[in-house]
Amino acid sequence: MTLQYYIARRFLGLVLVVSLVFTGLLVPIDLMEQLRRLGDDGAGIGDGLRLAALNLPAALYQILPLIVILSTLALFLSLSRSSELVVIRAAGRSALRAAAAPAVTAFLLGVAALVVVNPIVAATQAAYEREVAGFRTGISSVLSVSEEGVWLRQGDGAGQTVIRAGRASLDGTILFEATFIAFDAEGSPVERIDVERAALAEGEWLLRNAKTWPLGTSDNPERDATVALQATIPSSLTRAQIRDSFGVPSSIPIFQLPGFIAQLDAAGFSGLTHRIWLQTELANPTMLAAMVLIGAAFSMRHARAGRSGLMVLSALLLGFGIFFLRNFAQVLGENGQLPVFLAAWASPVAAVLLSLGIILFLEDG
Image 1 (cartoon, helix red, strand yellow):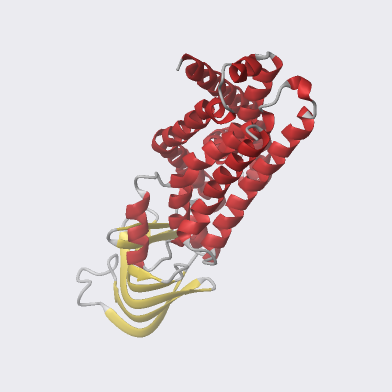
Image 2 (spheres, rainbow, N blue to C red):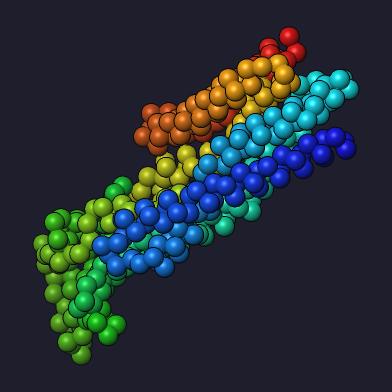
């Protein structure tokens, strides 16, 4: 156990070092990207740094499998150069037993990331999405989904309109059993409209069976209410704004995802993307263990055996290939071309089996 703890401690230290290296690379790159995208919307260097800092946890969390495989390669190459790996193998440790400590450590790291880091990433990602939406539209969010239904918000300098609907179409541009409440610039309600159906067109909502109450100009709104089979009201919303307001699934903590998916289904939206993300997150610890096994399979060789560079390159290519296949399967799952479970779990399980086969073939005959 002392040897296992030693290897695990070395592995965790290298994970920290590689993460710091990636942090130093990602922050300036993301800063330039934020200034390029939002510079025309009034974002300065301070805003860009804040956005880059909010986006950093999500970026590191996304490339965690690559950080793990690089840390694994650095671990076993250092053990090989110092001849510690030779001593470990001479003591009767098989390749699988030598790789067990970092593999289990990576799996536990994935579980800790899922339980602890994921909510932190979700909070910073949600704050990042609100900041970006605020720069682009002046409104932090135009759509939200709750147990009461779908909520939207639109507005301009003259006031804002809050919209609540019992359910909506998949893209949120058609609302059913909706209520529009208009507010003036001071925040006082001026009008309420209940409609059977509202469809978003170019610059306006097309209303069907609308009843309007003049809240701001009448002392008896019910007496002065009007009913129209067809009506329109101006809208500053676009399909793209509504689509972007869903945000990314990573902005929702893992523990809240099942409830949010149920709310999406009840409101009429498709929760397929969020289901794929949930299963992918649950499979992430297995993916990290697979990356350790892949790195170990190609780097558990003595430095004098030669071809170290070729083996490291092979490990990196295989690791990047598995990482790409997982993302590709996730996209296919989000498009409905693969079942949810298969899209999330096929790549990690295949990577574990493939890496075990390579270890047994190369190291244990």
